[in-house]
Length: 135
Image (cartoon, rainbow, N blue to C red; front, side, top):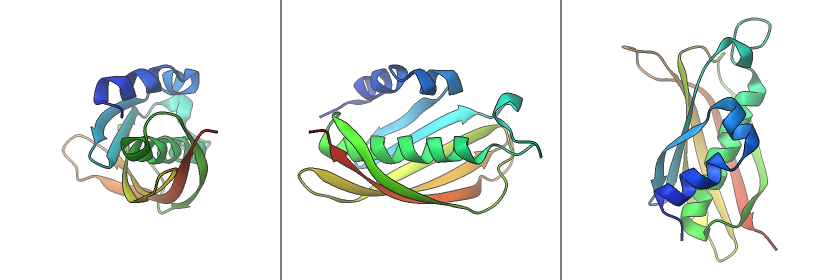
């Protein structure tokens, strides 16, 4: 199984995650939390964080949460995301938890929030998905 340091190394090995500046802040006991700083280069034309960035965060958080149950050799099997409100703030946080895990597949839920200093987190998206062991 993976520990926090190995999970962080796995995230750091993903070029796209490095490009976005993503970091794991929690990993273990059936849950994973991924964060990234919101910056202008990640926004769409109205000044909101681009939906693709929210989907990336949910996808990776879901798969890392599944990794707490299944180990490191995983692929996303699929996920759905619902955008609840425009994402604005300083930090994006995606927290995923395992709902059910078998021997080769895990299903997880994820809540995606934006954070601003001194304010309550605002949920901007919710996702559910599964990951499976690589063949």
